[in-house]
Length: 262
Ligand SMILES: Nc1nc2c(ncn2[C@@H]2O[C@H](COP(=O)(O)OP(=O)(O)OP(=O)(O)O)[C@@H](O)[C@H]2O)c(=O)[nH]1
Ligand SMILES: [Mg+2]
Image 1 (spheres, rainbow, N blue to C red):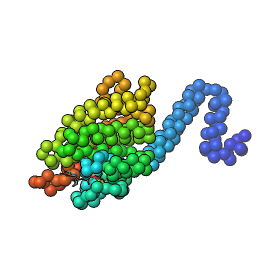
Image 2 (image 1 turned 90 degrees about the vertical axis):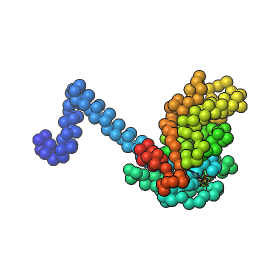
Image 3 (image 1 turned 120 degrees about the vertical axis):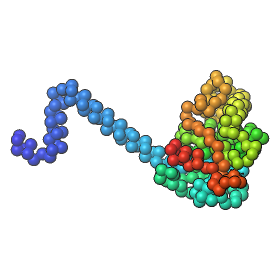
Image 4 (image 1 turned 60 degrees about the vertical axis):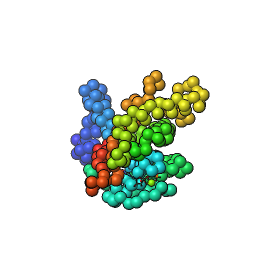
């Protein structure tokens, strides 16, 4: 027996000792083994989940046409303000965040005929969504803005993946632009109306208020962003164009969000 033990590696020795102890059914040893197994399993699951998230490495810029997505994209990636035209295709680029993570940023055209096609193409890669709003024209576009945001959030795939959401109230350099607080409150009211309209259109008395079966917010309460348990929503104000008397545009909140939240 001693001769065989000498040939065994330390690992095999330990394993053999463990087997012997287990065969004695010592409760202390048993509980240690169970604890170690649980810890190992947790590490494996954590790594698998982290790897899954690693596959989702994009932040999508979405919002109505003219809200400023392409200008933001160009500020963020090239640090300059190119003149932009209504986009007909997406822009994709690599961006290094303030804390040195590399993510991919996708600028999705806002025009109604194309945006769904590009959303379908990129949504499974989305770790974050930046919903850009033109704060100067918000008042007259509120219905359209609310409907687009509602459609994005109630999309079954996006809802399941629950990316982080930043609502950027852009064009704050324009004098009569609405503040993020006003925009948030009005959007909540309008999304509440969209939610009711969709439920009525479906004629459903069941739980869902959208064709995807996703219900946004709490059933018995008016819609509030704070009720969205699946999405972490933040509102910020910014300006992709510098104010007349300033050199730099104000996109700091976006850069910080990309570094610390995504
Ligand atoms: N004053 C001001 N103008 C801005 C700001 N951001 C964008 N713009 C202007 O708004 C117009 C539309 O901006 P784009 O970036 O092309 O808008 P977009 O969201 O990409 O629009 P689509 O490509 O049609 O979806 C351009 O003339 C921009 O220069 C801003 O913060 N302030
Ligand atoms: Mg564009």
